[in-house]
Amino acid sequence: MDDLKLPYWAAGIALVLAATLMVRDAYIASVINLIAIAALTAVSLRFVMLMGELNFATAAFVGIGAYTTGAAVTILEWPFLVAILAGGLMAGLVSIAFGYVTLRTKGPYFLLIGFAFTEAVRILYSKSTVLGGTSGMIGIFPPVALDAWMPTVIVGISCIVILALYVLERSDFGKILTAIRDNENVARTVGLNILLVKIACFAAASMAAGVAGSLHAYANNVISPGDFSFLVAAFALAYVKVGGEDNIVGPLVGSVLLVILGSYALGLGGDEHIFYGAAITLAVLLLPHGITGLLSGRRGRSAAKGH
Amino acid sequence: MQTAIQLILTSLQIGAVYILFSLGLTLIFGVMRIVNFAHGHLFAVSALVVASTVPWLVGAGFPILSAYLLGAVAGVAVALAVGLVMYVGGFRFFQRDLVGSFILSIGLVLLLDGVLLRTFGGAVRPVPDIIPGTVTVLGAAITSQRLALCVAAIAVTGLLYWALTHTKLGKALRAVSIDHEAAMLQGIPYNRMALAGFMIATVLAALAGVLIAPVTIVSPAIGADYLIKGFIAVIVGGLGSVPGAILGGLFVAAIETVGGFYFDPSSATIAIFVLVIAVLLVRPKGLLGHG
Image (cartoon, rainbow over all chains, first blue to last red; front, side, top):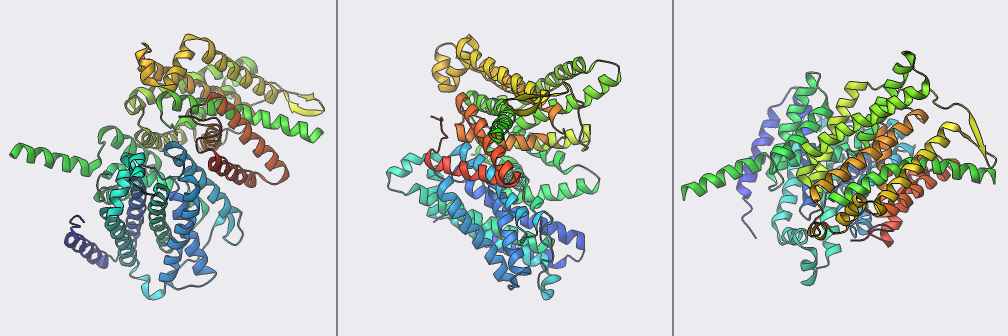
């Protein structure tokens, strides 16, 4: 196994958590929540990109996680952590069934079917009276004791899940995913069950997306079908592309940068769609490897010059 | 019996627009191997231009039909300009790069969403009746406008089919979509064909927008609804296949009409989704897809 750079991760997570403990301002706290949830969604999207597929159903699984938590809290009155786990597990289970059928397809078909799935799931929420129909669910509150520490809790849970996906990416499993992306048929010739590996990758990413949805439900207290359109996946894609997809740090950088800039632009009366649209378009045209790609590319060049 | 005829007629009307839409998507995919999510916005741009110029021209004293024709020309021209900018400024660099082009198109979708909303406002725009009156076909009533829409869409589809099978350009486009390297070896200029394919698809989307404007309520969000149905149609039919796009368009329209009649529109959408999953389970590349 490669060097996981775990000391850096531990230091980084500790630093971020310490910073969230300082926050007392409600607006800053809400932006921090948004960043943590956005980063988790973006890392989930990128995890499926490791095997060369663009997973637009991410938006649907964020929604499934959020609605599961919503139902668990408001109807079943389950405790906090159990409700979050339930969100992740539900998203994972649905993704196994969905993936079993759709992962036989590839490329554009998989992408478009994920897009259609997102819309179909949204229609299901709005038709279900138990789940609040088109107006959604209200009153998804965290326990009172945790209320003041929500940013720390949300960032902490996001960090754990992101770290888990990172460890998975660096393990032998991650190498199989890269092999599938590079050439699926070669991977099949060495006896790997490609469909099974793909479903495992998809389920892991979807569980992360489900947890992101659960956190969203707790952070917002209110969820509605409109929150989980394909735009969730489109924004996650923006974080991945702007930050850079070659490294797991990319989506983190992208989500921190874009959420802060986006909230600032929104505060000035800007248009969120134009902002994110311009960010994605410019990033794809000008920075094919994102911001982290730009930095590591420069480091690589200067290192080459040094030798 | 009368219900059946009515349902078939309605399916044909909706299907006609879906066909124009999915033909464009399948053409772009075939020639450039890209998925263009911004296709729906080309359609929305032309419908919005028609919906804003027609009332204005009628107010200026033009007769309604010539106002509509002028509006149609303006709508197609604006959509072509937007399409050209998209191709030259973006998609040209992402040919045969599915993920890159898709991400670019998502960026364009968000950008155009915002720009259209700013330019045209969020309000819905009704377009006055172009051809008033209704006709009765085999005992089923249909407004003349919708009949005209149907006839025009079928004419455009027929023209495209003829062009693809009989003209030099059409044959070149088909050759490129089957194997672009072999086509280039035969001396077919690939880059020119990619531009031609993209612009023909833009014209198809713009025409669909022009035709749909008088029979529906036009708003900047109109593109998204048709886009998802158009994509489902090409998934069912098989990406890159022209007969597949026609078949898929009719399939989606028929389920939507019948499901909407016996149940409700949102159940029909879910039924379409379930059927697509069933099709993919049997044929992962769509009914008529290959390669």
